[in-house]
Image 1 (tube, helix red, strand yellow):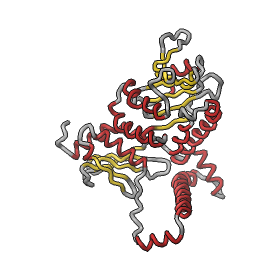
Image 2: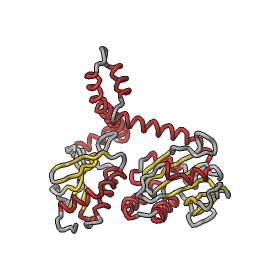
Image 3: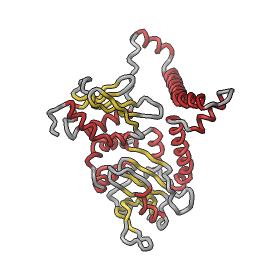
Image 4: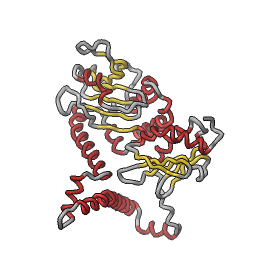
Length: 357
């Protein structure tokens, strides 16, 4: 079975169960172990995947990391797990930092079963970096993530090659993060640079403010046009001209132009999982539109639970309702939908008064 298929199945499980995995052990059993299995490792072979790996460091005695993946009798990867409800940060990696320098491991993974952060020693040999070189989120997997994860599978694992590429991956991820910030909310420096290139005269505060308001939409439009051009080229390359003409004659309708993306499907599953605490999940339905994707109760457009505004290139919003008023909340990533669990439950009670308080 291909890695993409295995991860897709695990993604469904993650979205369905993450809200009830309140302990570290639950996250390890339900999410992390299946993830290691999807990479081809035998989690029941203690010479390959060592649970509760211990290597006492200095005055720190009895500390353990959750898993160590071994190859040829040497530790290759250290893994530290946290509960699924925890927002990961470098403070959770204390044991990984200590163990990294006293084992043969060149790779370390910090995870809550949903988000996986991969670390190495790019900056200083035998000392784990403060920032991960690769991060992916199980409920929002991108094609590029799968290509990177292929390198961590048991069949393809090559530690020297991974560490060599880790520096490039880290730099690319940091560049991407900065670009996303600039595209979403252009900094003063970026606005000034672009304004100076475009505007021939004196750059007054009013002109600068005008550029700041126009820059983000201009970037979004440019990226959208570029994507559309690539899609059009791909469609033309895969469809002979004569076949295209026949298809137009057979079906004169242009369609509604609505495409439900994988992120919208993942977002819907998260809302559905939250709603399942109070109602039968079959009552929670997704209905897509051109400008947003709605999550409805009982497939009734008058009973909107939430709206997902995911059409932006760099920004995504979750629309929550109180009565007929919608408030949009910025989503740094899909996992932040869980932060609005209480609001989703309150909305369900508003739409269906029979739900007990």
